[in-house]
Length: 135
Image (cartoon, rainbow, N blue to C red; front, side):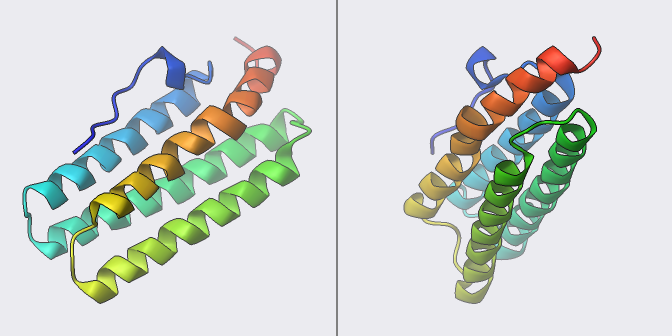
């Protein structure tokens, strides 16, 4: 299983958002290891539930910061959050219905789901917030 490791390339230069992202990477890695090691389905589902729950909280956290500091890209960023959360929840339900651990393809989807957003929309938002927020 590919493990996602935190490094400077994932930093959006906003410590509280970086902390959230580290937690999401940790949950992604836990999910992959649980699937690879054949942990019980209930454990895998619990980790997936936590990943989705933490992602939802994190998105709301980001949106509060963007609103507070007047980020002009807020509407588009919110729409991306809604799409990402919907696709994550769809995978969560699919895994629950199938009763099977996530496949390599599904893990790759989650990897892209997580890192694609950080490297894309979050970098732009982080640059703005890092310049706007008080130190």
